[in-house]
Length: 128
Image 1 (cartoon, rainbow, N blue to C red):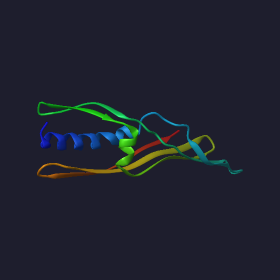
Image 2: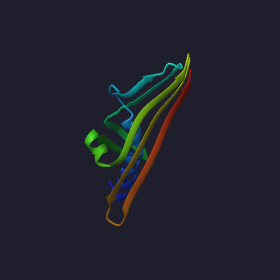
Image 3: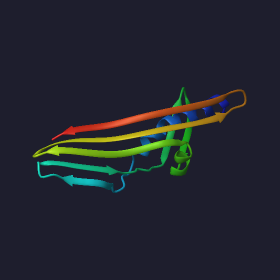
């Protein structure tokens, strides 16, 4: 496999690994749950997800097998945080479920070095 194909494969792997972090869920850690006499209620929780990445990457007719374990993804993880906050009054509530991840990595080739920096924010916002 040529260096260019390896470089493209590394880029595709790093770009694909952010969504892989949002895989199987772990039970959340509730930080605080409060209800006041005025009818307001508050909740906050932190949680974490972890997965591996396995499959094929194809670019311009070149196929590369991808097999990254959680340890490989964590080696390239610079920062991540996931959490949810719920604020409500009476029967109405607002939920914000957010995650942020920052990944970086590089690969040295024969003639070039490829560096990839990726930041991703995912937010789900619900009013019930």
